[in-house]
Amino acid sequence: MCYDRLVNDDDVAETSAVDLLRTETVCALRNGAMAGVVVLAVLLFEGAPAWLVIASVAGAVALGTALHQVLLLLGAGVLRARTRLRDGDAATPTEST
Image (cartoon, rainbow, N blue to C red; front, side, top):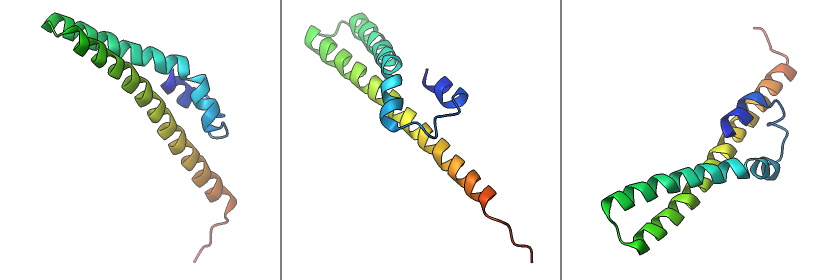
């Protein structure tokens, strides 16, 4: 899952964005599908027309998948920035006044 990948993988800061997205595609689609199931259940319970149900479920799957991937990239960006700042602080000698 996205969170596990960010927390437990020490190589996230060095992994390319394309590789991160590729490895998380299945989880992203699973999250999008879960969003679609929730939308489907609510709209069917409400008695919405079929065209609205189909369009809304497709949108929920697409948006759920995209949201997962965007949050993955944002999390990886934060980890990269933190790593660079930490490495930069360790490499720069401090001056005492």
